[in-house]
Length: 365
Ligand code: HEM
Image (spheres, protein in one colour):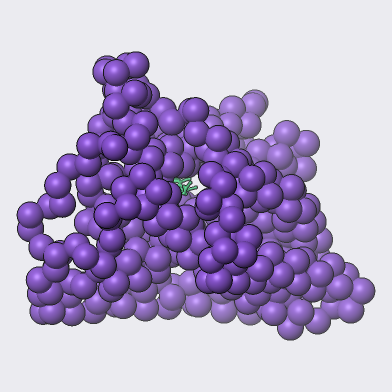
């Protein structure tokens, strides 16, 4: 039986179910800019490698500074909720991988600077792909660390062995079978979401700027369909890499888990079919429906991720129940949080809407 620290003696400031809901919501908010950033940089690297400066590359360069900043700022909220709800698991796991984990900060600073260097100096650089590769490598390193943290915090039985094998704090959770498929599932998903957003944007630009729209439509659809097809290979590997009881839960034993898995697969497949049929009968509604279906996939997969964490922890620590963490709600504080969150989201929505409207009207990148 692993040794787990006591629950934090300070009660939660809101009921656990509300904090879990906010963890879900804010994690999904983190995924949107993260997918545009990681998918967009991967595309730019590809276009620099084949020396093809398409309108898609201009579009990606125009949004990257904002999407990268949003990836970082939207990461703060889920980080706080994970610590509040799963502190007994999160802190020991991140202490075991201390130095690797702390490297997130320099990786972020260097990756972000290198991205700005590329964006400002691209025209004069002989090998613009070098700073871009550094950014992609460092951002993927950050994603890999989050996957390490997420798997290690759910498996407390490994903490002591890992710590004893290297007490200096350079550990990663490399023996976890699900780590690599999990990482690739996220990476491929990011490239696919980037592709569909590009295609939908192309669909909306069609009358304002037909040339740019065509490039966004064809490249975006190609990226979405090919990376989703690859995920239809990696996704099952990810499922197979889970411990048998968790796999069984997703394959029939747990009704909600099974339902969510079926919904995610069907909505992703339907979004792909609609994107392909757009090539035969171009109607922007088809792409908007595909985008809505993919949003359902992301929400359902986010919920599966939460259930899998619950089951994995319960496997080793059967007494742990989020619902039983003591809470002493401070509703005033909670209301202030909700108002600030809603205000922030409204401002971001307003900025994106204005940017989108002017782009669709004037054909800007
Ligand atoms: C460019 C930088 C970043 C990238 C590419 C990135 C990517 C990712 C990915 C792929 C995951 C899912 C990992 C998994 O479950 O296997 C993730 C989770 C997460 N990220 Fe980020 N991230 C970035 C920056 C940040 C920053 C700066 C923060 C915090 C300030 C953050 C907070 C989180 C949190 C808290 C989770 C896990 C949530 C949970 O376990 O429920 N991320 N990130």
